[in-house]
Image 1 (tube, rainbow, N blue to C red):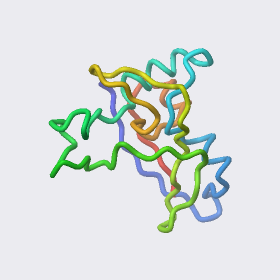
Image 2: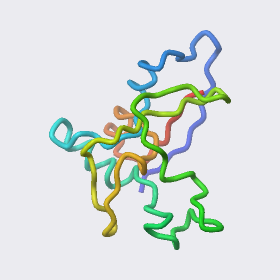
Image 3: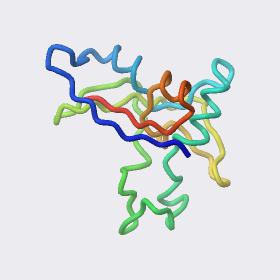
Length: 130
């Protein structure tokens, strides 16, 4: 499976600071299948963590009964800034759900992604902002 990890450090004057712009670049939600079925299928196939935790305690990301990646995340209606400067990304509790390995998962399980890059390269490309 194509997979990429890339760290880009922007000059201070180029950093994206407003939360609305962050939501345009980084997503932590399942795309609406009726709006973009191709992106929905890609995210469903390669941008879901686990499932782990109580859904699958034997998952590779589990250590001492806890997901080492912090999943499932909490639902959040809007992106907010965290104390250490990292945004806490929007993960709305909406009707978007998919079944993975017999488990129903929602936005709490989505790995951060950029819709454009994910769709263009059909690859697991993690993104995030600081």
